[in-house]
Length: 80
Image (cartoon, rainbow, N blue to C red):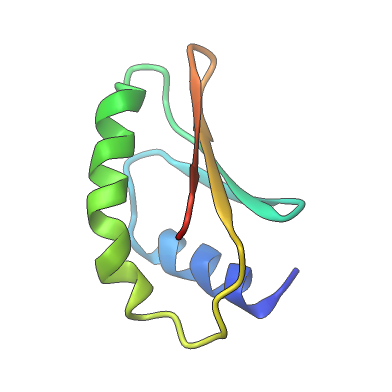
Protein backbone atom coordinates (compact mmCIF):
# COMPACT_ATOMS: atom_id res chain seq x y z
CA UNK A 1 0.00 0.00 0.00
CA UNK A 2 1.36 3.42 -0.90
CA UNK A 3 1.82 6.23 1.62
CA UNK A 4 -0.84 8.41 0.01
CA UNK A 5 -3.50 5.73 0.37
CA UNK A 6 -2.34 4.89 3.91
CA UNK A 7 -2.76 8.53 4.92
CA UNK A 8 -6.25 8.65 3.42
CA UNK A 9 -7.32 5.51 5.29
CA UNK A 10 -5.93 6.80 8.58
CA UNK A 11 -7.64 10.15 8.06
CA UNK A 12 -10.99 8.59 7.15
CA UNK A 13 -10.86 6.34 10.22
CA UNK A 14 -10.36 9.42 12.43
CA UNK A 15 -13.51 11.05 10.97
CA UNK A 16 -15.74 8.54 12.75
CA UNK A 17 -18.27 8.28 9.96
CA UNK A 18 -21.31 6.46 11.37
CA UNK A 19 -20.82 2.69 11.07
CA UNK A 20 -18.56 2.91 8.01
CA UNK A 21 -16.07 0.13 7.40
CA UNK A 22 -12.97 1.42 5.60
CA UNK A 23 -10.38 -0.83 3.99
CA UNK A 24 -7.75 -0.99 1.28
CA UNK A 25 -8.89 -2.50 -2.02
CA UNK A 26 -5.94 -2.96 -4.39
CA UNK A 27 -5.29 0.54 -5.75
CA UNK A 28 -8.38 2.09 -4.16
CA UNK A 29 -10.17 2.47 -0.85
CA UNK A 30 -13.35 0.52 -0.14
CA UNK A 31 -15.97 2.10 2.10
CA UNK A 32 -18.86 -0.09 3.21
CA UNK A 33 -21.78 1.92 4.54
CA UNK A 34 -24.86 0.57 6.33
CA UNK A 35 -27.87 -0.36 4.20
CA UNK A 36 -30.04 2.23 5.93
CA UNK A 37 -27.82 5.11 4.72
CA UNK A 38 -28.72 6.66 1.35
CA UNK A 39 -25.66 6.11 -0.83
CA UNK A 40 -26.46 9.09 -3.09
CA UNK A 41 -26.62 11.45 -0.10
CA UNK A 42 -23.52 9.91 1.48
CA UNK A 43 -21.55 10.32 -1.75
CA UNK A 44 -22.57 13.98 -2.14
CA UNK A 45 -21.56 14.72 1.47
CA UNK A 46 -18.30 12.81 1.02
CA UNK A 47 -17.41 14.77 -2.12
CA UNK A 48 -18.07 18.02 -0.24
CA UNK A 49 -15.75 16.96 2.58
CA UNK A 50 -12.89 15.73 0.35
CA UNK A 51 -11.27 19.16 -0.32
CA UNK A 52 -11.01 19.80 3.43
CA UNK A 53 -9.55 16.35 4.08
CA UNK A 54 -7.17 16.58 1.11
CA UNK A 55 -5.41 19.54 2.77
CA UNK A 56 -4.35 17.27 5.63
CA UNK A 57 -2.58 14.72 3.41
CA UNK A 58 1.20 15.17 3.32
CA UNK A 59 2.21 12.42 0.86
CA UNK A 60 2.65 13.00 -2.84
CA UNK A 61 -0.79 12.67 -4.51
CA UNK A 62 -1.36 9.55 -6.55
CA UNK A 63 -4.33 8.27 -8.50
CA UNK A 64 -6.86 7.06 -5.93
CA UNK A 65 -10.49 6.10 -6.01
CA UNK A 66 -13.13 5.27 -3.45
CA UNK A 67 -15.63 2.43 -3.83
CA UNK A 68 -18.61 3.25 -1.63
CA UNK A 69 -21.36 0.75 -1.24
CA UNK A 70 -23.63 -1.54 0.70
CA UNK A 71 -25.82 -4.50 -0.20
CA UNK A 72 -28.24 -2.19 -2.03
CA UNK A 73 -25.98 -0.12 -4.31
CA UNK A 74 -22.41 1.01 -4.90
CA UNK A 75 -20.67 4.03 -6.38
CA UNK A 76 -17.12 4.89 -7.40
CA UNK A 77 -15.49 8.28 -6.85
CA UNK A 78 -12.01 9.09 -8.13
CA UNK A 79 -9.91 11.93 -6.75
CA UNK A 80 -8.89 14.50 -9.30
